[in-house]
Length: 142
Ligand code: ADP
Ligand code: MG
Image (cartoon, rainbow, N blue to C red; front, side, top):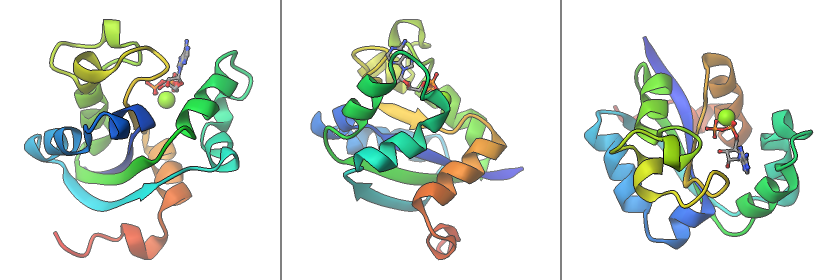
């Protein structure tokens, strides 16, 4: 099934000049960029995006990190895009991520782990809609 999913290059990835390398990985793997923008998230935006984690001990640290600089928001599109993006990213903890995955290659810690990816069809729909309007996410160039 053709799916859309939300990818975020987190502030550590943007600061370390990894936008091209990470986006290149998605393209190499055959995922299409349906929409893309750079944005410096406000505290409220980051809190809303990660609301599911609001009772976790790392929530404040996560929001502070995600608002520490601009991020790249991308809508990836393709066959099984949600699961394929999760595979390309690797596990949350870079030490446990598969060799060759983005997190294994680039992430420095479980918190500053370089990329985000939606984890299910339901969260993908919600997360894409959180940052992109209907017209922005309709793929008009593929
Ligand atoms: P994923 O991003 O792989 O879906 P989660 O949804 O569990 O992982 O967590 C969301 C984000 O919260 C992670 O990507 C990471 O930035 C941060 N995080 C998760 N667990 C921890 C932790 N134990 N300590 C610090 N930050 C964490
Ligand atoms: Mg998650």
